[in-house]
Length: 474
Image (cartoon, rainbow, N blue to C red; front, side):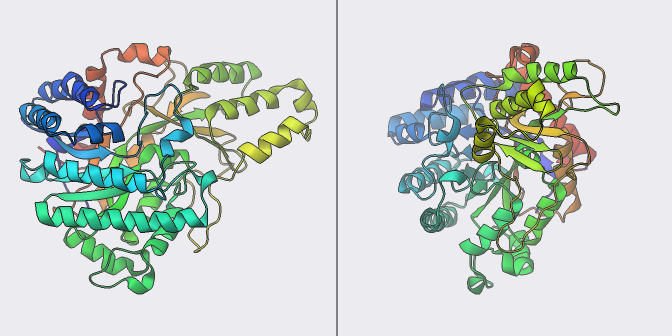
């Protein structure tokens, strides 16, 4: 599955500054990625691009597409990764659940995705050999609370149509184009167990064979085919931040996917916020209040910040502000005196906001969380991409309760890549995706006012981590 990576193959998603038009993308490439390539002293460099539906439609214009291609060629940038997850409006004032629409039951999602595949082939026609691939990430079916069996059947039909299109594109162009479902908390596919179950619905076991798509029920044959060459064009984008928020054990999760033969064409190298509420000798209410105060700026109107709490059990909140609201109510004197109080507001929160993060799924797939519930008194993980080279957001404070990151889960994913057999035929794209530079709280953002230098620090961290595992060609 993995082998040594080239420095110039490590990508950064160029979606830094707001905007979803083709010219906005070109500005991001010029002002950030091209400068980064020169600073890294690379003659060529892979890049990741978010291409909205609007931009994809604009780039159907021959003159604008030619200008776009000329810019990439002039700067020696090769888009080996396209973010096709948000259809549009990723930088609107209020995105939230809209980022998952249209879902994969909607023909608009299929048309948009096929258009991205066509565009990727055209942008990479003159690329050097090791850049002749593109992993296009997409929404993991849709938003879970809106899903139903009818949508599921339509989504499977549309995904298979997209895969067939990408297979034809790849065969005719010699450029491998892959479609990558990206698990995310709150979506239909949010956990490894759900992906495994879905793959058996997508590729029923009776259809598996030497020339079939890769399915879970013939894992060994599928794995062998995957290692020998690019057989599948539908797989996963594995966002480490997302699975850390789900409290999945990263190495176990990746091992299950690998054994099932489900290809991971792209890793999003990303880190979530981890909140440690207790120290060895407990925590004062004043410290809790301080942590709440420091978390409040991470709430914003634009994006969802799904939050999972590990205490006695795993509890899921759709957004950080709702988790903080619950914490504040639990700290109220009336609630502490009567912990069993179930007034109307509390019942409403329980019904609307709480859901076990790892529900049992049909098919007997199980994933042990990365941390046994109750092992620590209370840990929160928040879907908020923070700089990957940081282990803590504590700003020099004493170790203990406070704000940290899930950087350790990035290390676990890289350890897994180092542990599996090498393959030159298939190297997943490794993409750093800290897209939150413009919405980070001021206390963090002021330390990273030079975005290019900040991205460079992230890539330096990733390069060193790969070198330490002998995964980087020098």
